[in-house]
Amino acid sequence: MLIYIYLFAFGLGGVILIGSILVGDKDTGGDGGDGGTQAEHFDPGVGEAHGAVAGLFTAFFSLRFWMFFLAFFGLTGLVLDGLDLVDSPTVALVAAIGMGLLTGLGTVAVFRSLSHSETSTAASAADYIGRSGRVLVGFGAGDLGKVRLTLKGTTVDVLATTEEERGFASGEEALVIAMNDTTAVVARATGV
Image 1 (tube, rainbow, N blue to C red):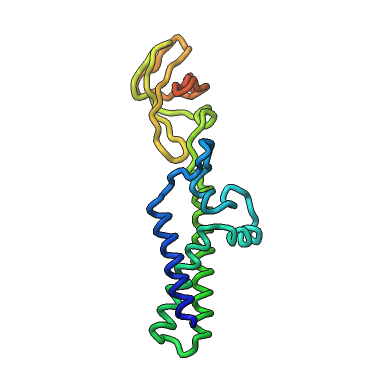
Image 2: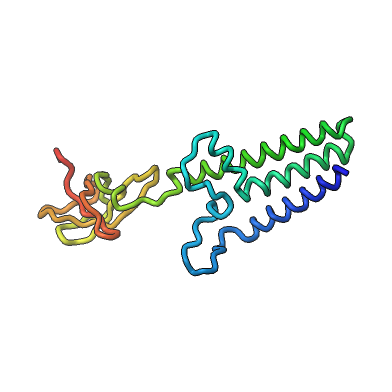
């Protein structure tokens, strides 16, 4: 009897898992509004701050948890019980439940961690202000040049202009004091 439960769980979990891979992050909202991120569709608690215990309980409301739980619960049960690798069906059932919980909770934890990662957020204009970088293309007052900055661990080249009378030559250091859309307004760093 348990073999049919394992087979059903593996089939259902596998179909949902393969379907989520094929669908990817396409918007599922049909109302034309903001459908949210893919992480929010599969894991409703992904955008919220949770403690360890609260995060554990909210994982059970996640579609991502259930698809991984079902797939690995079914697969483990099929392998252990179907191939008679263990003597008792109870041992196979406990191992299958344990593997399902482990993979389901582990997957939810990994995706939550990735969604809160600093590298997944784009830099805002405020992140540029106060950063200094090297001038790549020299420019004068009112002209456009280019400055290379290191921002959130990534090297970024931005268009730059200055309001200072003395321009910037290639290789000089410039300090971003403001952002106008995608153009940095720079000045000389103190002591230069």
